Image 1: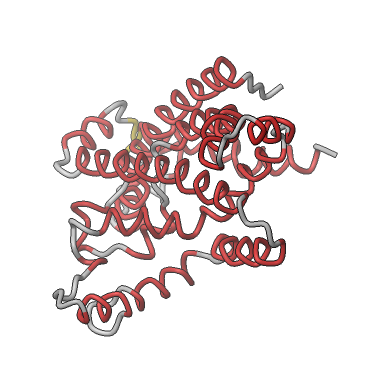
Image 2: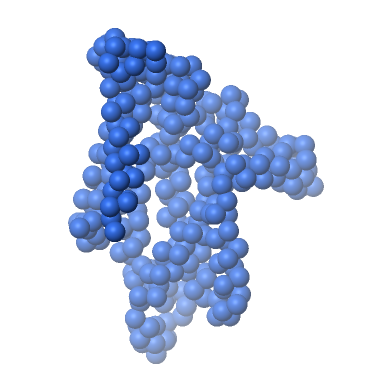
Length: 285
């Protein structure tokens, strides 16, 4: 049963790793891997000598860290609120509505966001105009753009992430709540002393596992929303590699950045799984 999945991983994940050699070459497509000139670490020195590299790294870590923080906080709060809804049909309806964006691509959601946040015709700026506030160009302002990325990503994903925490709530022994009621505890105290401690293992697990994606700020989302106006605050490693490799045809430096990102991500993933095992007793095998 595992054979088809193993074959796909070998073809699409391990097979392309042969291209890592490009990071150490002055790669020319007409010469291929075997005849392109070998330059050693020159591509890495060139990349770190570019003025934009450190800015891109800073943007990637900042945006990814904010997404991780929001991705841990918002789903937990929503799961706690949904847990308090007693009418099943209302609860199911809300769940369906908040899950829906997860199944839409960023191509579709990007178009929706561009219309909503438009400084001339967007509903958000129209509302701000009613309050006497000048229109804000959310997708063209370096001060606002990173937060738009975080907010829109959470809008898309928090409903799906909530499933994990709702499942964790079902594992809490209901007799604990009954004992708390007898002792006179209200809903807030029950949440603080029973619900959150009961959810703590899964929260710790999700937090530690999310460390592995600290350098993944979301290529598809950023690519569909950013523009040269917000490169200063919104350009991330993946979009930088895309422009350098596919647009500027600097294959060696682009591969060098991608390889560096992969190595750092591997270190973070290793640390994350070690912490998940130590703190939440999570094991892969």
